[in-house]
Amino acid sequence: MNSPMVDYRMLIRLEPSQLSEALWRLSPPLSSGRRARWVLVLLDIAITDYYPVNEDPDVNPTMRIWFASRLLDFIDRELEVPNWHQIAHWYVAFARKAIEDGVRDLPQNLQADYIVGRALECFALTRDQALQVAEKEREHHLDALAAGLEGEEFSRAAHVEGAGELNAIRLLLSDVRWFQGRVVDTDLAAELDSWLGIYSDLGLGDAVAQLLAQRIRVAREDL
Image (cartoon, rainbow, N blue to C red; front, side):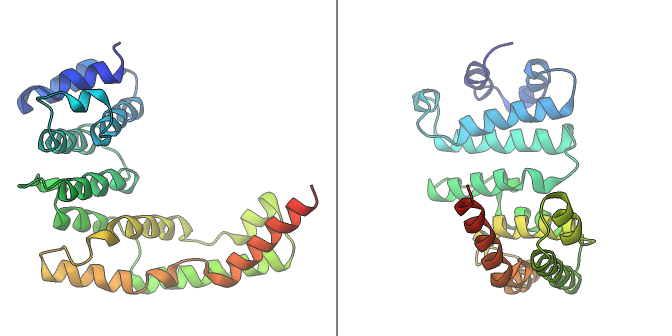
């Protein structure tokens, strides 16, 4: 198997109709997970300006953005990644790069409305539910810290139902908040604004952060 850099140099020059077959042929066998990780390496090459391959005369920012769009589509549709939020930051990163590099006529899957819409579809909680889970999470953390629990005992005591879903929402909001003010669809923009309006209330809060920081300081002093 060639190195990802060698594969990238060849793949980025293929016609769109040839790319999917070439990706299946060149990617590591055995599992979709391994193939996805290999494609993510190609994405990392595509977004990094200083790689020599991206300085080739026939490789330009627009070419790299469209190549990345097709790679993301390959991961999403053909490798069927179960949790879109795991690759959401790549969509955001390339959309931002395209705008900053002045690329026009963005691929549909790198446009603000598409990315924000996909992100919001991943939310498994309503705003009210997310706020309720966040409040319980803060309470459980404070109780566990006050009790001096550590390790697995702390993790069990601090855990609340819905924590995984809430964390996915926090991560996605952190990714897509850059698009605030850039979404064209008014309903979608309003929904994003509503979620971002409560974003600061979805975290563990200052009280928990201070207690955790204090615990870390004490642990370091005891070393």
